[in-house]
Image (tube, each protein chain N blue to C red):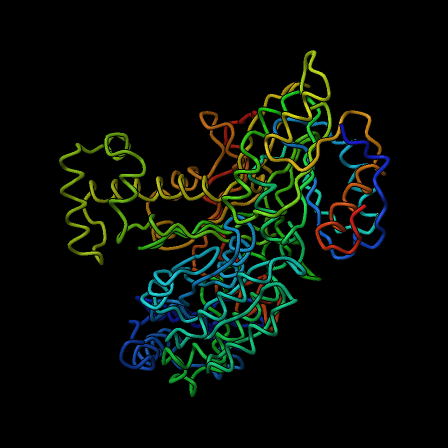
Length: 157
Length: 474
């Protein structure tokens, strides 16, 4: 499991970074996603918030048009695995090979451990998966860390 | 008396409306043939002579304004990045400018796309792509490919502002007539098509009117202001919004059935009318135009029949399928043909009804119920036109047809198709004297007079009470 809170902060990485957020599939839970979007904006990111009930293809179309650097997919109703199937492949198909993909929320229903769930989503091509109860700071830290690593602004620790 | 002459250089006729601006009335109407292919002034002179015969003598016109859809109309190609985003925004801008959209392209232009565009020979290309600060690479590349092409037409650049100037400079360096305007989608999901629409109109006035030979009539016309569909849109907007002196008619829908296409214009916000409905997709333009290139009374009569299904259509027209086929053959052999026999009149009515039914269905938004864990949610795509209060029919089959009321009813909500957000209980009118375009042209000079004159042409085709109450589901 990734201990998000322990990631090093890399202030400044947010500059000029565009993020797509939204709740995937037939899922209307918008509140947490809205809080996350506001927090990301406050952290200096440019956020394109697609809102609830967003089909996978719409995340990708928005990312192409806005030249986004990352897509943050929320899923709260337990069908995340189904809705996110093939997401990375669709991105590659659309020419977004390098885009950073995060997923978070109540990703599965039933008695699966978080470790197993995380493994499933990382296996599907997401760069990070976040469990229920993740604080917005943890997501911001992860983004800063990943963007910094990509642009080699921060020496690896 | 302050007289104005309002001219429509059409593809078949040159139509004139002489109006008394002060008295707010039509003095006379006349038409001549369309002679743009040879010399536009020949048809105009014939039409003016007909007007003179009606009036005794021609008044001194204080204003002589024209619109044109002659010489193939304003042929446009649009290019964007994602089909449903900037490519769609570019399409909306072109349609809103009154263009005849001959091609719409998305993503990177391929060599065969470029050959296709060259073969389409557009008058104007609208090049979009990327939100401001968004994707720059694709529009840069598309600009370079247009630069390297043999295309002689004007290219309006309405893309990501980060690269717009660079793209224009590249096109200009290659000898193209490139025009810079604001991005049609400056931010994701924000449609800003008015600057592009104005740029299109500007190029139309400054270049296209000359290229098509319409400026030969310069001695008889002060200005050719816009393509005719744009003039109809302006007329519709004026009637809907009103002026400082006159309250407008509110949300309205205009259906224009022609020989080759059926145009639908709506002037309405079209936002969801009930709480809890989720709007999906791009925002819609307040004044929206759609053109159905497969629904025309003459050039596309068979396409209308096929869209409805031949047996269903034959039943509606009260014809056998064999008789229907024979009559369609006759229309195809002579597209100028006007209906004469009762069977031909019935066929035309069924064609018009079906064209309106399908065209308004494509223009209006739809609602859809999505099952979620929390229960059903209604999602709306496009405009909700159920609150439209006036539906106006224009064009020959409606203005001169025997049963405009029955044809216009095809625009209304239908319990059998509850998810189509069509008008529920509007007043149905026809533009009896074909004054919508004239009102649109005159609105540039005197909006109050334009409103009153266009209003006089609206004839209700039935009482509102005659409608059966309809319930909306969804």
